[in-house]
Length: 455
View (cartoon, rainbow, N blue to C red):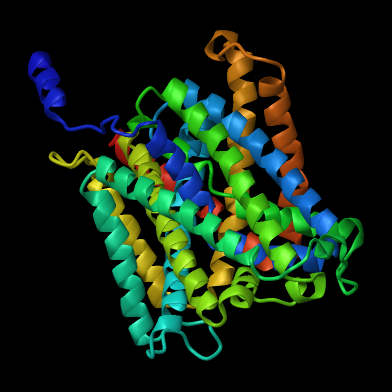
């Protein structure tokens, strides 16, 4: 009996470690760099009011994100399992806490992100088509827009369905293409007959002061967000103790350099008032060099950037549901691994289906991001605090290293995230409260599955 059981278990397909260091880095860079870098320089100028303060906000946001990446590098090397935050919170604070994290990511954060990004892709595609993909107020997809968005979701879900290595190769190629496009359009912006004197300019209508600077840092942190996704696929990364830290830290450094380049390009091309009032700063900067064709070039770069981000999010999100289900805390079918492709194919399909439901519901997709934002950062902070729990419980499980890596990096990240959490909750009270209710709604669901396990 027992021997047969062991043999049966051996026949059950599992996830494979098929992602190398380059794939892992492309997940970090590809997910983080979406459309934000093309848009947030204007938001940051409206908040901070000067080029120097905008740069300082980028640096501060980059340092905070780097501290988070160092923390997650330690966690990923310690526990290279599928699920990321779910695993860390489960092991530190118990199965209920872990489930509430995984539940929120599975039901809201990942599907809402996929829906919102696919909508963004459709919106940009609309600039190349005579079809109307969004309603006049920009809050709902038209029927043709929905069909296009469904197609985008099905595309990335299909890529991830047929193998993590195929999805990783797609991610790597498109990330390299994305980086090349960002460098190219930044170079074009520097040919726009701008001036370095713009870097001394000010936007007098800015929010200004400490509040304005905090808002600028918040915008920078949003642009840096996405690096934790790598840890969700840690079980499929080769040599995770080496490659996860390398990809997280190296990826964040590369992202910071690209962000500084883009910011310098738009500030060189546009004076502070023009930058602050621009709806698409990079497009306006490249238009000066290429005319109206510049907008099409930037739109193409945004589409490539968003597709890469979408693919990485689809890859990582399904592993959270898979990990919960493998523990017996969610539907067992979500823990199934495809016998040929070795992917959590059911979890990938269900994630895509939930994204389609969000697309059908419609609404303001900025609200979807806001709904997810508080819950997302709450899980980052909770997972980061787990490192202290693991250190206290067993010092030998923490890789030896310098003081700045532990405890300084996680402490700084948690301290920096606390005011961000407070501001996110208080400034978006309705959506943050809804996000909290989604988390609490997972409590009876958890106990329902716990009861079923006992029966």
